[in-house]
Length: 274
Image 1 (spheres, rainbow, N blue to C red):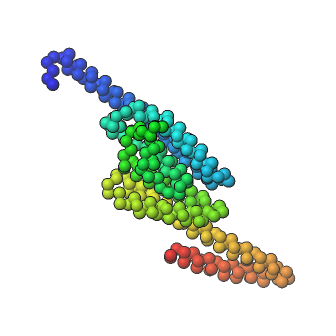
Image 2: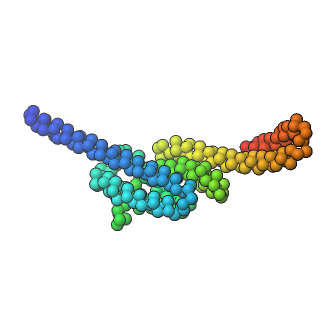
């Protein structure tokens, strides 16, 4: 288009300015909505960690979390849909809402694992981004899906470590560790095609090591406590025998603890070598 006079040029630039301002304003609103989705999703994850490691049942925690996730879906995600009603607008503003999408997916994936002991599928996740008629508010990119669900491995690591000290916790931690290993192996094939996934894979591998270290530490602590109890019992029995000679009792304790310490060190060395 060729502009013939000054007024036409000014009018064109005014139109460009209004369009640019409208895009910026929309981006700011979307960033604000995405930040709120992130905050509320994190609160749900914290709620789950607090409840599933207390004396309450997992079902109660899951029910409370699903209620809050549905609130995010029907309010914040619905508001985002109004801002990006078409696919073109969604892709234009994806970077503004990506953090919220991934954090929400992480919370959804965590709830799904607690409920089913498995990894959420793409179609199951898409329902959490849909209205009550199961019509998606906006597209769910595959890379966003992968990045979101890969974050759940960090939450599973925390769950495993906090579970170790509870009854049956080591079995649960071992099952979680196996699950996280499978996730890491399955996600690895997508790292060349999904930007940022390699960084998340590195975090997942760190989570696996932390769970393994937690299991090993729990076993060593158990052995140490059992050994200490036996040693204290032996000292109590020998107290009367060496009552007239405290130095003999001290020598017995020294030899006993020295022997027990070598046993523990030998076990720990074998554990790490495996």
